[in-house]
Image 1 (cartoon, rainbow, N blue to C red):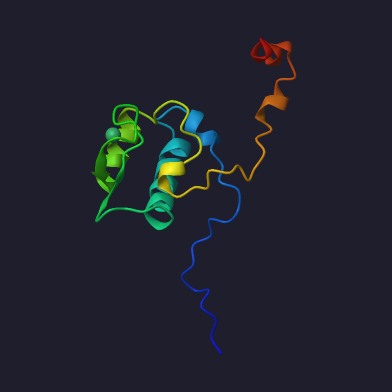
Image 2: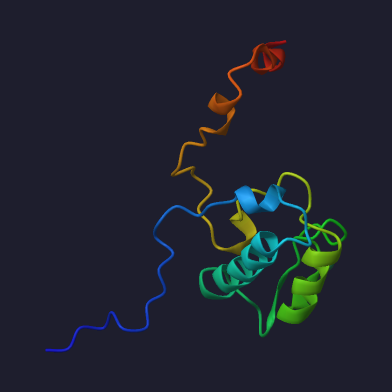
Length: 114
Ligand SMILES: [Zn+2]
């Protein structure tokens, strides 16, 4: 009885997004973009060979092929605040609590209260 686990990509663990804040010339960012594309084409709903381009210029409005999206994300970066890839197959409901803000431990966290 062979199981069918062979070709399944492992996206179940936490999708780290901290690379999105890295400079776009860094390997970390470029790897992340590749990861994103992989995710979008496996988990999302590409139409033909195109996905919505989440770059700062297209803002998920235009559909592009993988290579074009890749270039846009390297050249322009992601549209601001697109940390949950809801247009590309990621659940809208947060499954992971982002604990980033604990790191600073400063009072500036209080600013959002007003
Ligand atoms: Zn674009």
